Length: 493
Ligand code: AMP
Figure 1 (cartoon, helix red, strand yellow):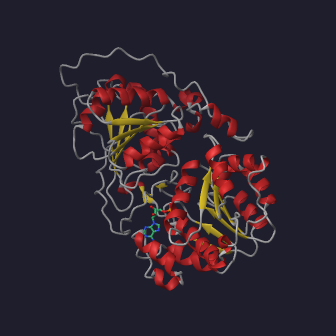
Figure 2 (cartoon, protein in one colour):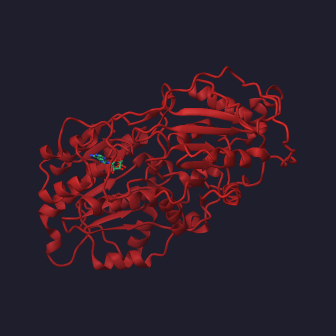
C-alpha cells in the first residue's frame, strides 16, 4: 500500500502502542491510518471509505486501544465492554481480534472474538472473564445478547466494519437492532469500501457530525496480473493442473472450482499425483478451514482448492498463482478471483482452464476486462474441439447463469445463522451441467485450437515497491474479495 511521508511518531501514540507497531514491522502509517487515527483519538465520529487491504484495521484498532488505555477502565475491578466492533464474517472477526491483540500487546487491554458456526461455550467463558473490546459478527452477537451474556450499555466506541458487505449479506436489520441497543452517547466509526445510498443513509442516521476519510482503494488493475487461458477438455483439466504444478515457479496456488465436490475431487487427484493440496469449502468445519488456510499460509500446503464462497473473506498476501480450474459463470467473479494474486507488490499470475462448454463464459470475461486473454498453446492437453462450434448463444445459456454465491450449499449451522431475508445459497450446481464426456486417449499431441479473439501480449510481471512487505509475528491475511469498480476498467483488490 502507498505510504505517506508521515511517521507513526507524528501521531501522538503512547509508547506501549508505538512499541507494538514497531514490532509489527510497520514503519509508516498508511493514508487511512494517518488520517483516521487523529480523528478517532479526538473522540469524533468517522465515516471511513476504505477497503480491506488499506490498513484500516489498524486505523481504528490503534486509536481505540490508546483511548481505552488512557481511560484505564480495565484497572477498576471487573472489565466491561467498552468498544464493540461488528464485522460481517468470522474470518474478518478473527483477523481483527489478532490485530487488537498485536497492537495492544503492551497495553493490558483484553479483547475477545465471537462468531457463529461454532460452539458458544468458549466465547461465553471469555465474556464472563471480562473483556474491554468485543469483536463480533452480527448473528452471534444478537444471539448472546438475547441469552443475557452481553450487555451493550457500557460501550463507548462502536465500529461498523465493512458496512457495505453487511448490507449485501442481508445484515441490515441486525445492524439496526444492535445500534439501537447501544448507548446514545458514544463514538461511532463506520467503514465501507463503497458508498451506495443505503450506506449514506445509515451513516446519516447513526453518525454525528462525522469526519469523512476516503482513501483510494489499493486496487490491482487487472492489466498488471499476467493472465492466460488454456483450452482443454473437461476430463483433461486434472492432468493439466498436475502438469502445471510440476513447475516450481508455482510457489503457491489458489485453485478455484465451481463446486465443493469439484474441489474435493481436485484435491484427491492432486494428492494422487503427489502434490500437497487441501480443499476449503462450506462442508468443512470451521476448524478444518482454519487449519487448511493456516497450512497454506505457512507454506506447508502448496495448493489450496476453494469454491468462491469459501474463498470469500480469506486473503493470502503472497500468492503466486490463481488457477481457474472452472471458469466462473459470472465474469465479475473472474476479476475478484484473480485479484487474490499480485498483491503487496508481488507479481501475479492467473491461469484459466477453459473447456468446450465454458467458452461463452470466457467471452464474457474478455468483454468485461476489455481484452483477450493470451492463449497458452504449448501444453500437452490442448482441446481438439473447434472453437467456432462451441459457443452457445448468450440467450441460450442465460437461464443457467446464476449468481455464483448461490453455487454452494452452506452447512446447516450457517443457514440457521443467516438472517431470514438473506437469499438462500443453495442450488443443484454440484451436479455437472452436462454428462461427463468419455476421456479420450491422448497419445498424439492435439491440433492447436484457434484462439477466439486475437491474443494480446501479456503484461510485464508486476514488481513494485509501493508497500514494504509487513513483517513481524502476526499472520495478517484475511481480506474479502476486492470490490468491483463500477466505472471504467474493473479493478481488483
Ligand atoms: P487491513 O486493511 O487492516 O486488512 O490491513 C492490510 C494489511 O496491511 C495487513 O496485513 C496489515 O498487517 C498490514 N498493515 C497495516 N498497516 C500497515 C503499515 N502501517 N505498514 C505496513 N503494513 C501494514
